[in-house]
Image (cartoon, rainbow, N blue to C red; front, top):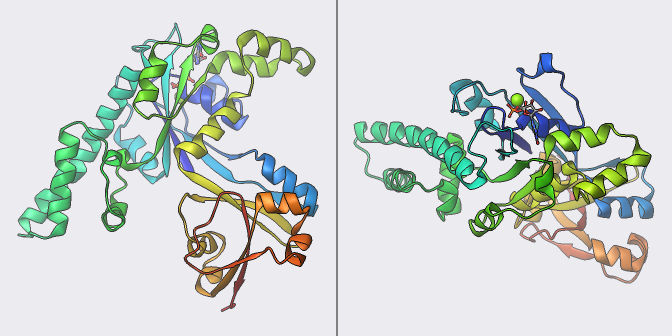
Length: 341
Ligand SMILES: Nc1nc2c(ncn2[C@@H]2O[C@H](COP(=O)(O)OP(=O)(O)O)[C@@H](O)[C@H]2O)c(=O)[nH]1
Ligand SMILES: [Mg+2]
């Protein structure tokens, strides 16, 4: 899962990237692109690790990419576009701290970014439509692209359209920006963490998943000695590190659930879209497991904790044996039976 940080120049993208990744970027490196893999902390994985004591524990990882902006109002320039298009999701950084040169109003900032993304997608849609027209086509694809054009022209994200799985599949090669799931990090000043702001309601009413960060201050707090840190955090109204807050929100915004696998070598957490089948989950691990899929032995997390392990659950006959179409639940521990190639 790759997440691209997007936002206007000096909104705080690189600072948020530093917070999430734990990497510190010196001034001489700030104009370069940055990539970091970030492990997602997961209390359930810690609990399972206590039960299974595996030699190796592998949490879910998200890859974050931070692209440098340049002066001027646009972010989605051609050089940035390819990387953003290749990402699975977007983290929109909205500047709202007092020194920020932009609007400082997160909903307007979001609208301005959305408008840019809509224009980029519209260009792709129009080019495709022109081509289809030239070929004299009158099929479903023409109808679909005409619908996309209407939606974009009326200022809608493609994500807001209720596209069928078939349509989504046929659009997957276009990497539309407004079809990518996103969440917002609103970068407020140090006073902004404590007090609720007017824009909060507006963002929430729009169904946007967002979290407040105060990137500069939170980076500074991390430099403070641990023994003194709590006092500062309390003073700022911070109950949880920004990285944790953002990653928790990311899973929600991206509609991801976690399933687990364990063997004598490794306990591992995997993220898949909510609603995925056991077949899709198997493919996440290895195409051989997917191709040779026989059955999935499923133990829900709560059952394992309640029984105190997998063995007692098995002895009580409470392991579920599921087929390819089983819809995986958040927290399932799964053992895949498959025919090796
Ligand atoms: N006062 C204040 N300054 C910030 C905050 N976040 C970022 N900055 C500063 O704003 C400037 C631009 O931040 P940067 O993360 O490089 O923005 P980018 O262009 O979006 O990558 C830097 O000098 C940061 O130190 C903040 O929350 N408060
Ligand atoms: Mg930057």
